[in-house]
Length: 415
Image (tube, rainbow, N blue to C red):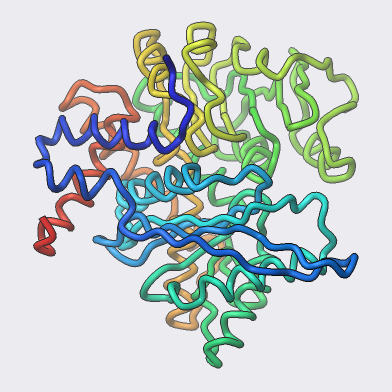
């Protein structure tokens, strides 16, 4: 039976990597559980005058390589296991791209779509008041995730600075540039995913200018649509989806017009010349490259056998289950796993931390060049592990990340 508990999936991936690396039992025990977990409740007075109590978490999964790094999610179905899994994946993600950081994640169980801006600000400030004693530029640096954004980060930064009575812009990343954000952060996640595709096409001889499809047309999906053509020199976008619709056009969409339509109407639905298809149909279309950029567990043992893409670049966290991985590998589909494909975001967040620390900021070209170098190097490091151990790409990326974290734990004398 396929497990859809994200944390169990994440633990399974760690166990498989640990076996290949011949890690001892104590090290495995240390790596399959978070080092620190915090659960909070905090009250907020809503617009109707009533007080609502919110449940929230912050998990610092592992900090052997540096302070915990990871996003904050505002989601009505947030669970501790989802946050554990994401904090776990962040640990390997920062290690795969060789950043001096650990992994963390946080979340508030709330529905931002039903809240006013004042309520959102109050929740943001309430959350940061709850976690303020356990974060810090040398301890844990949050960032945005699902339904949070640069504005949320600015409210949180302001609240934190009020509490510590000190200017500390580096306490959160992905802020607007006016308050310590960096150039090149908006499209970093998508850019990293497309750079990985470029390197994969070089290694495996796939044609990046053929068709591609994007599942999930949020920030990362929209930017991937545009960057695919810019970085890879072409390509025909034939299908996209968001929570309200999945659309298809065999002749291709103009990515710029589609992004404008989404920004204007809030959905890809009713885009001129598009045929609506079922959401699950998009994943099995005959395309060269597929970008899953929505939520977890999109590709499972139920649909993996029907996938026709040659390359899957995972911009979402955990979109493929372990069972699906095995099926895709047997079919010869090259999966660029989330901890590598979507590592562009955390890489540029790290650049933002460095710039905040020195109060000296790079231009966009410098940021993009440094990102390209980091991601390209990480892709080829994972390829080496894949060839050496004859394993599928996700396991290869996990092996690289887990080995680096395990080594740091050992050097510290923890195990």
